[in-house]
Amino acid sequence: REKSLLETDGATVTLTAQWKPVKAEFVYAPGTWEEGGAPESTEASSPAEISGAVTLMSIAGATEAGFERTGKTIDKWVINGKEYKPGTQVEISNILTSDALTDPNAVKRTVDGYEIYTITATAKWKVNQYTITYDKAGVNGENATGADMDAETVSHGDAVTLKANTYTNDGYVFAYWTENADGNGEKYANCDTIQNITGDITLYAHWKSEPKYKIVFDK
Image (cartoon, rainbow, N blue to C red; front, side):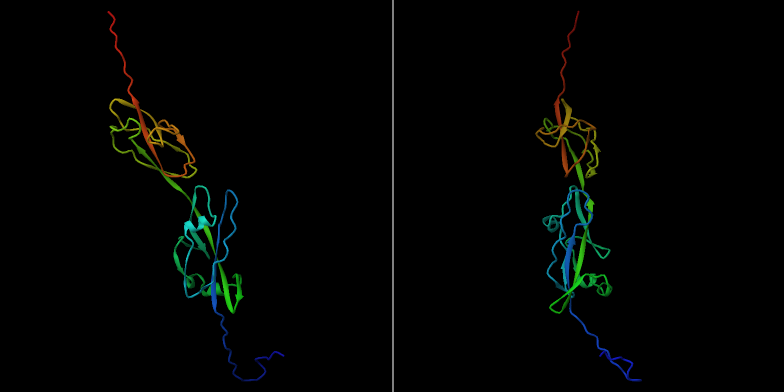
């Protein structure tokens, strides 16, 4: 039968703490997923000693694992409410604190005498931002002049109104903008609105000869 600590009046009872070695394994979760299907969380990493450090999954690694969203990039990994940059090396003991070890809701299992705690890193996403640059030297633009037009920044999904050309070119007038220096591709007029940009772009100003007029004098 179980022995009561109170059976012997006045006796001193010594309790010896029993310790289990601890390891940690990491699982990465995609977080909020607004479009398309979310990939499953990754398989757990190999358990690591709590006294060691771990390098959190990089953005490239997350992409390989299928964590992709159109126009968005993983900004941080969130672990127990704290944010970490992808690719950061973190001391495991700073994550698996004494509070975490005693949390009744902690996910853990016992393997070969080790208490293995599962730490979940959840992706936090940011909207990508892209730069639109304006270049004067498109078709017939070798001699175009003027101060560089200011680049502009646009967030993915936002509509942007293109700037009106401010460059000049002797003997030519502005014709249109395209993303190709040779003039091919979709043509944009001054102040056209574009949307769904998926990366940095350079718009080249293309030029056409000024119209020439013949003056006829009538007596």
